[in-house]
Length: 95
Image (cartoon, rainbow, N blue to C red):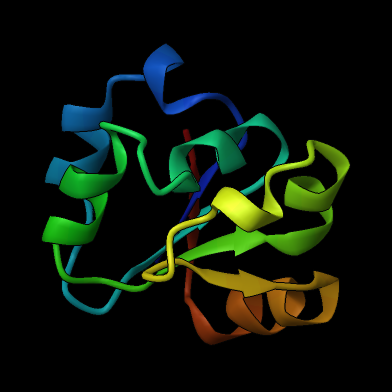
C-alpha cells in the first residue's frame, strides 16, 4: 500500500495512519505534506519509526523553499518516481 499525505501531518490523525502502515508499504509526502519531511519536524520521527520508506515529492519541496531542510532520511523523488511508486504498490490510501 502507498500511503499518500498531501496535507500537513498536523492536520491528520497521524496515529491512525501509522497503525495502518504495513511492513511492505511506503509513505509519500506531497503538496503541503512535504512539511512533514523537514529535519526538525516532530511528526517525522514516528513516520520513520514504523520502518518503511518515506518519500517526498521534490517539486513540492522546491515550490515551498524547503529542499535544504528536508531530512536526509527522507528520499526526494520526482513525478516519474511517484508514478513508479504507484505502480509498485497494489493500493493507495490518501490521508
